[in-house]
Length: 306
Ligand SMILES: Nc1ncnc2c1ncn2[C@@H]1O[C@H](COP(=O)(O)OP(=O)(O)OP(=O)(O)O)[C@@H](O)[C@H]1O
Image (cartoon, rainbow, N blue to C red; front, side, top):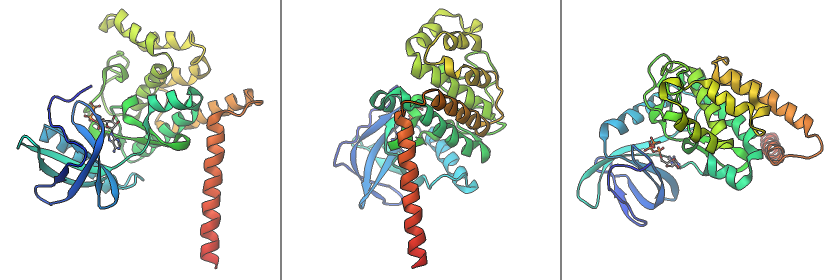
């Protein structure tokens, strides 16, 4: 998807905020979507991400969500650092905000490079991220491969908080194929089950992309149902091991992502037992992460004891 505005910042351009005079040196474009362009920028020696949009109202509602999440404390590290306007090379004023730079690849690129055998761990981490938001009273809303960034050892971060909605409200922003309403399987209202439904579609999309696209073309909008997705799942070798979990997710059987994550963990456990001989890549990653955490804990313990 591309943006409808033409602002282009180039490497080396220095953006100076109109009101607060924050100075940011542009490094490169990280990505773009319907609401804006996201650039990697540097302030002093710190790498940050700058999102600039044409529409102040759209960007402002995203900023409000980020501020509210920070206020309520959702266990997220600080994400929003600055909000201001900039003057583009065309002399026009554009609203922007500065957020934490999330290192990593988008979910699809990560799995392409590392192999789909990492999906169980990445999926668990993604459910963990969603669980934190649900616990704090929010639904992510616009869950899709482009909004999930994955770093080393399957570490997951969500980007694009434009679709985040308070539980009980309407979903503010969504992408058709991930949307529960698109599959006539429930309302477009912000309840944790909405995100879990999108997670299930995302799982199908990552494993059976062509069949999913074909399905959306074959069936008339009024006839689409979650059973069509289940048809792909039960006939796919890659998805069949997750069929029970995916069915429950599509039917709204999980109360929230924490419950979904718990069941997902059980699924991974069974897979590992079945493949007892070979150690999958993601499991090696999990072991490496655990060792790093253990080493850091010992270091801190010793520092405080000495
Ligand atoms: N904080 C960040 N750190 C690193 N990359 C980011 C960050 N935020 C966004 N990106 C990259 O930029 C892309 C576009 O950003 P974003 O999804 O926020 O734009 P958008 O206009 O809201 O998109 P959409 O059309 O999905 O609503 C993302 O898919 C991601 O690759």
